[in-house]
Length: 257
Image (tube, rainbow, N blue to C red):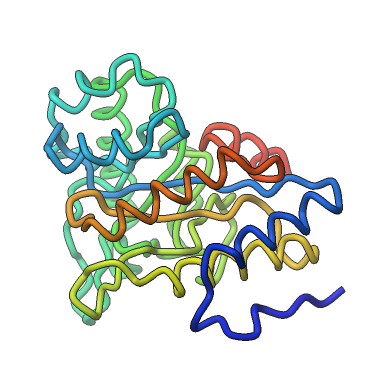
């Protein structure tokens, strides 16, 4: 079965998402989405705003281990719906080619393994239980290092779903709400909903598997982005054929397969 994207994706809007979810309901399926937010280090007004928007929905919070502060651990204590995961080690660019990466192929395996282990240990000290996922800064991780992940207690890799996949289990994100090359604001409702609907259609057709991942960055989240994710959360909460998936649930399913 081939399902085409909305005829006018440039003008996609909330009714398009509701229509797609209705199709899921008609086929007695439930669409799953998961939410990752990057670059957490401390409890800031920006993070407080994000947590207020998230409400009870599951959130995977990618934390930079080297600079993570106790204030972040204190703020997340008791928030069972927020799962910290590892965002590299120091969020430092080690790539000299112009494509930023903390883990480019030019680094030695020993250095990468040490960074992964330090990051895992630091987050364990702060939070105790941590989702066994690495979200590498800039969503780049050289495939040759994927065999190092299990040694650091990491079960899965989370990058952008459009990138080539290697040997590691993946819990990717698919729709980044930041317009990085156009002011770093919101990508716009049409682009966001068009991306989400396209991913859901591929899953309904059987062309892709796993939940659809939404990516935000709380430190630069503008009013338009906050408004969009708040409305998306309301749609998911109300529609019988949609739900948020917890990252720990997603990892368990991906590793099992």
